[in-house]
Length: 394
Image (cartoon, rainbow, N blue to C red; front, side, top):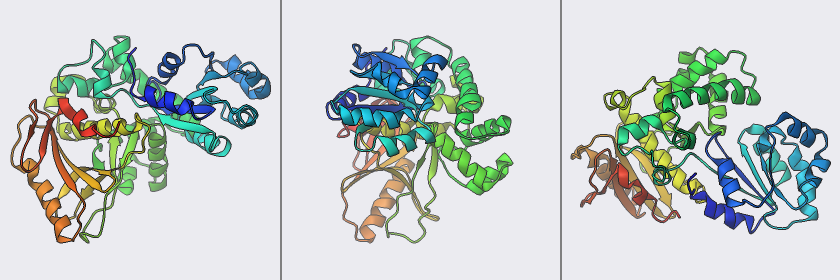
């Protein structure tokens, strides 16, 4: 067990709201976080069929068992319980009574919005960041083993081989979680779609092409992608655009949250395979974007992250908006810096000046090497020092 960054925000929100919801992907550490933060609270999981039936068939009786509050886990199994919880909270609005944890899906998000709006804080827990992962004695010390294994905590906490755990995780996700959200008649087709998406991580989303390659309709591809996003397997990085060029491409990019899952879906089983893989750069880019994303949500903040590309011009892998300030991030998996790393950063800065935009800009390059340095054109950061990009988030 390791200390999670989100613990601070969880304690803060439980001092304001009678209920706090901690959601995120399955196996990201939600239960462990809640139980470590509140060891004296009663704990009940709706995973067990008998407990689930009790909560479903007699919600008032179930809540009466926990009149002084509790950690209620796997809340997504009985989302209608939140309606009864609303009345209970309104009668006793003491801060921090209930901590609710669950893997996100459409039914849960809708129930929270309808029943607990204004009555609860909502937090997202993703797999550990690089900084958090370093607390595990078995955490990889080098980049390619790290990318290949990913960041799901059970791999490190239980010492389970990454390929074995990720295989079981994928099977569970497809056969259980996906079926709970949508009626997928052909699970094999969805599994193929999942692998095709892994091959497109860090690429702009083209639903027509994705659907065609998967043998499904455009609308089905859209629906399946939404399921993957809602369950925190992937996220879409929107395009940043202002009126500086007419040729700006506005399609979002697809990024997987966990590099280990991408590697597993692509058949990468050893770090040396990744070192020579044609998608090495894309996997590294998604990992960097995910690390920045985690720094926001684990501080209880909404990420303000984008990418930028012109049809015949510069492309910026990641833009971070911090108020008026705009951080530009180029992401390169190579271990040696060269002048090409800075080309698009300079061109984008020129575009902004030419359009009369006076927003403060800061340029960064994150690369697969070991040394960080401050250059006149940009701050160059080793992958090991990526937390320096999150300064000011927490």
